[in-house]
Every structure is written in C-alpha cells, then in structure tokens.
Length: 100
Length: 205
Image (cartoon, rainbow over all chains, first blue to last red; front, side):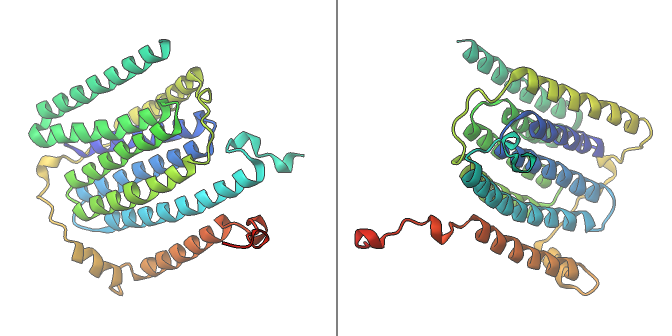
C-alpha cells in the first residue's frame, strides 16, 4: 500500500467526523465526531512518519495527540454533565443562556 | 417495516463494501493489501455507522470499530506500540467515557433526520473530493515497495521521551496538562454539597 491509500482513508474519516459534528443534534455526537477527527489526524501523522524516512517525530505527535484526546474527553464529559444538570438537555441548540 | 428495510439495505451495502475493499487490496498488494482493505473498511464503516444509527449506544459502539480499525492501520504501518496505546486508551478509556455520557441522554429516536444527514455527508465528501483532486494533481506519492521493513521498539520511544535533546519538555508539559485536566474534570463533574441528599434527617445509614 502506498502513502496515498492511508491519506485517502484519513481524509474520508475526517469528513465523516465533520459530518457527524454538523448533522446530529446531541452533544455526545459532537464528542464522537471530534474523536474521529483526531483519529484521522493520527493516521496521517503515523503514515507520513512511516513513508518519510527514519525520524520518530510523527509517532511522538500521535502519542501526544492521544494524550490530549484523553484529557479533552474527560473535561468535555465533565462539562456535558454540568450542562445537563443546569439545563436538563444535551442538545447544543438548547443551551442559549447568554441569548436572553 | 420501512426502518427495518433501511437497516438491512445499509448493512448489506456495508458488508459488500468491506468485501470489495478487501478484494481490491488483495488484487493490488496481496495479503497486506487485503488486511489494509479490512482495516480501512472497519475505520470508515464505523464512522458511517456512527452517523447512521438512531440510538446513541449503537453509535458509541460503532466507534469501537473505528478505533480498532485505526489501531490495525497503525500495525500495518509497523508501529505496534501506538496500536496498543490506541486500543488501551481509545477503546478502553475514551469509549467508556462516552458511554457514561450516553447514560445522560434520553433515548430520542427522532433526532436523526435522514435528509439532514445525507446532505451533510454529501457536502463534506464533495468538498474533500474537490480539494483532494486538486492536491493529488500536484503530489508525487511515495511507494511502499521502496521502503525497508520498519522495526520499532517501545524502549526507543521511552528513551526519546526523556532524552534532553528529545521530547522531554513536551513530555513534562503533557504530564502537567493531564494532571490539571483530570483534576479539573473531577472538580467540575462532582456533585456540589448542596446537591447531596441529606442523610442525617433519616437517621443516617
């Protein structure tokens, strides 16, 4: 498999993540879309690292992306919990306290 | 009945797509190509299923296919440590966290609107195809045949983390960030004392 196959897979996964973000009306789906986008970035990092010689920068980037994704998921879930306690809903369009 | 037909059609198309991807990989690159096709189909099929399914629980579990497929792609690229980390952290950690979030959401089966979903997927895929065609016209891709077999070892990664000319600053920053983020997550997600049920009224335990 050439590099382009991995890049194509990563691009389509990125597109699916964006589509998941913008089409579903639920905070949980937004989180899932973000995870998909981060995964597609990871595929790109690792694939370019593999096809671009002997460095290990891409691998390290991927590890840090995984670390950040874990931290982000924990904080995001805490925020979702609080939003649900405050508003009683998980639809992003219903959280409009500042508009009033 | 209509829904049932929709589901059957969707999953038949997914199965056929997986088989087609594996056949295409087998034809172009032999056994590794077939595995690439399988993992790619897992990755993309999981993502598609996540958008398609009406129930949040099914979407969350379909994400497991995506994460496992990405781990398989890492394995094919020769980075076994990353594949293990991917499975441990994503499938074992983040997915469980998302499932906790699922418990919050009331089952709203009418939230998915097919025209909206179809239009979103079409728009995004169209945009990416346009940009991708522009990029592909000017790029020379490296080919796998020219590459030496990669040999990665986990202790290399560990040493690179702590070498002074390596990634030690990023490593320490990541450690601080993880600590801060997890403490903050616990802080904002905990119940306030005023929310607790006062057990002393009932005579305690």
